[in-house]
Image (cartoon, rainbow, N blue to C red; front, side):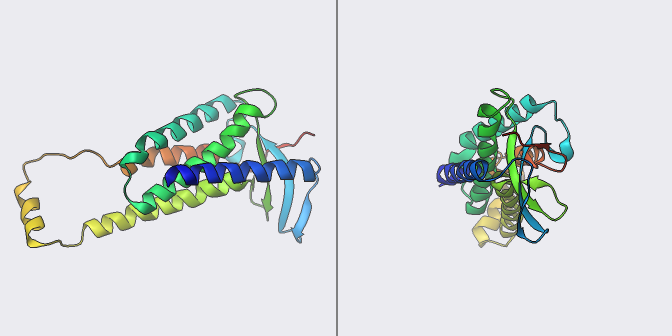
Length: 200
């Protein structure tokens, strides 16, 4: 299921970007809902608030590491919400990774295509939206999973917990170990204000 979500997000993101590149004129906004919601074609070389505009290669490395990490952890993720959250984040990272690898100005340092402009907020794309939604789903999945784990079980389970107080530590959950990577990927992929105008 995770692989299907990752592929679907990346394919939809790239398909819409291709459509926008053929439809929009570089740097010329197209009003959708007045001046509040617009399509504005821009290229972004950096991350949030235009930080790291000269470190595109670093964001490429982060995205590759995160996508590979999610693929490796996927067989050990059993919670549905955690799986969906990580898959959305990985799919968004993969969508923007395609831009980093194959768009101008060069391989591995390409600029991400952004085109959604809402109010005075940053110009972003569908991959960014998938990452944001994925983080929310992931956090909610972790929160409600912990809440469910705190519910009292049967007497045998309670007794087992009491007897297990010898200090042994189980293997870390795959979803929990991916939390830090999810946060890093989100910071790297939240494209914000100050992007460079798109080039034809």
